[in-house]
Length: 356
View (tube, rainbow, N blue to C red):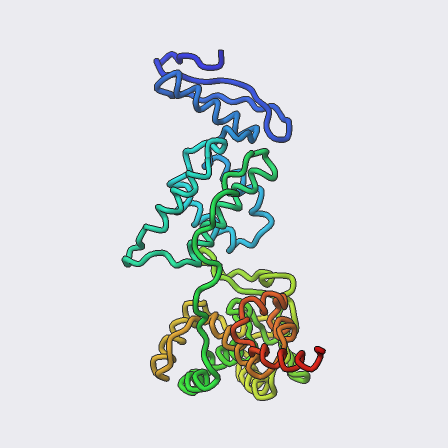
């Protein structure tokens, strides 16, 4: 019998089992108020140790974390953990994996969609979709690698929306009005010039060093990204392998950046960050500049959308734009389809001469 009464009157459990790698584990746990409580703890430990779907969702999350954290960026894992801790565990944490049904997921979705944030507003459709995707990822992981069957998420509809209804961006005139107000602050001005005229991601910009620029050819190399994690400055690989790229700068931008780097010699080394600030610092600069210029507020990431809009308006193809931004052409076509010119009339006229 693995469960017994200790000398002090409390209950204890002592047993042996095998872990996921086949090694024998000896476990002893004391201080339970009842035999049932001790047995429940033993059953749950053995389930988690052997990764059976008798374990709770909360216990499986620990296994999921061990499996995926070595494969993804630290910042991505932190975002996952926040969603799991605040949006998934309160509802599913104590449920056994094998007991989770489609109706449970629907009830969780309904509860989250009706929840208001501290400011009284509902969660955005894109945020709801990202939360839903995290639950699906955990359940799919359990099905693919640990034998959960059937998959309770298959029969449910995803909540939220993949993309925001309206994409924000500045026209060239709006950006130039903003840029004019930033000229008195050279570091911020050069940073925003690079963001708008190259389409770099914010993290890519903040990781740039003088050695990343080849001014003789007017090119900059994107090989890394910056994140601020738990009070630490962290340099990581770019978002995707395709994000590693060389971007050709317009001559005026190359000249601006070269002059800025020249002025920084002596204080900034070849491999020091050219913009040693955080994303929040840039956000404050953008807010102040937008208000001063009298242009609508957009996010810093929307400067990337603004760059794409400008290139499409200039007649460049989705393939060319994707190559410059370090994305797949299909992503550009899907996300920015509404910005490409409608050529249906031209197509119809061209086909009109091909019939009988």
